[in-house]
Length: 199
Length: 163
Image (cartoon, rainbow over all chains, first blue to last red):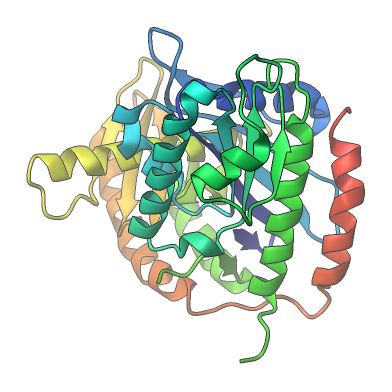
């Protein structure tokens, strides 16, 4: 979170995290397509020759002024492939909220479990308390056969207490619900940071 | 545990703007962006299209982080240096300030890099103590209501996305 009192802007960073090919970039593309053009910036994608995310995908959107402050949201995805772990970590710097995009297919469970383990390790290495960062689970690819029930995915990933949403990112179903919910969680958390409760 | 989140007081931004304006004048730059290490824009000097400073800051943060990692892989103890890209018409100079902030200087390629480097280095020296002060000085203005802000978000979410 970054509050510039001179410009009266509040900047918040949300990261889409998850295993490779789980639907992070598709989610961001859908968000970009459904954001009012006068409120969104360009969608930036740093891709490999094979059209896979290399560094990150990035977009910014802003909202109208609220209580004298203009909120700006910076949305990133991370590359999901295992060998880009270093890049994932740098994108997580300064994160305010995370949408974990899980692939709901049974055969991808182990990849989801490994990715959430990596996420917590990355957050710890960056100095965060992983349990203190707003997180929601977006169970993607709900239109495919051989998918696991959402409660089983949560349980297997050790994310029982985390809010979960179903999505089909290629159609956009459920994508905005996840985003709106993480924004609400992030803003609720930001309130405590601006006016912390007295000890 | 690191502190998450920064509130930048106006007085501090005035000091930053003054330093950046001086750098712009002396080094004949096109534009200057000061960003935090996670890619959030702190200050802009010069003119850019709307939305461009945010993209420039995000990409520079990725570049600086990758360069810091590269430096440490070859045994550099202090990976907080500078590097620059020489373009045909415009060039970019990036400086990682103490691992906290990134100075991004964009200038015409006919401007000597030595000039930019000299004045950027002086600006970095002046910015260094400010970066140290950042996390110490916080405080919202008296007229700000976080509860109203939280309530307002719900309405704004509906207005921002075309469901």
